Length: 352
Ligand code: GGG
Image (cartoon, rainbow, N blue to C red; front, side):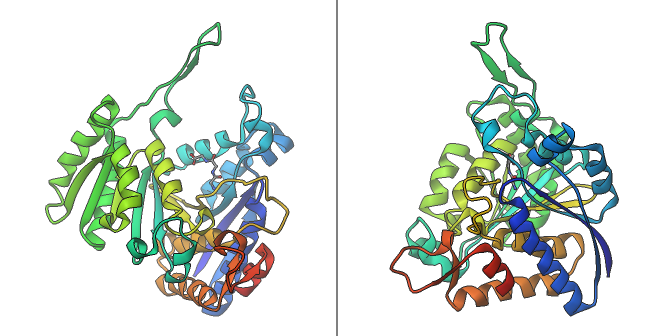
């Protein structure tokens, strides 16, 4: 198979982790006789520094011409400490999602048995957790109008959803539920928010097209609690942009670390694959980042964009094996008294 893959390393630990995602793709190409052609482009803080634009036209052009995109992370301390800055790294990520029509962000919460002790929650209730989140990506407060009053003392972000945005991601989530355990939980805040009432009524209507799927509706506050109390009650979770962002960071603690969670953003065109973690500039350049989320994102790319299931499965098997042999990065080595061999980013990448 011949494919063009664009690598966008981004900021902070992005370049460190995507190096290993790319290396695994090269290894897969060698082992299975595929031809992956790579190109690289800028986005985020590094792009602002180089061009003044968090998503340069050249990056967007290359993205549209590629078969899949491997992305790292965006963000920089400079912007976190100065909210008045108008041009920000995250704008690049939001814009590329919109431009490529990437409306569904799939975030699997997969707990490797070997990492039960790394989780923040009681091991017994976690074993076997396997949740697939569908986070909507092109609507919500992320894209609604943002207003600051002239005296700067009042601010608002419009939480906005259009029916078609809910319909298209709902179909993707129901289709996935049909392939899994036929259970879907839609998360909203319909007791308070009008956009959530539209969300719920749309999902209820679409659910009728999938009568075999057992559909449940849950308020976000309850879902946040149930995720910790009884994670296995969830299989496919369908939710809005902001709720999905927050819930999946919470869910990362079930999987042991943010450094273990991969994601796939899909729509009608080129797929976009990235760890759910951000740029983590506090550990950038220190060889501390966990490359496994980037490597797991590559597994999602192989399966979802290229239909290469065997290749994707090999990556999961290898990660499982390496964890079984007792190798860990710092974030998943539960405590100082553990028997693990703690590796840096480079060593873990090479080992995989
Ligand atoms: N790899 C994910 C990443 O870079 N996240 C940084 C970020 O600001 N993302 C915005 C969002 O996904 O809500």
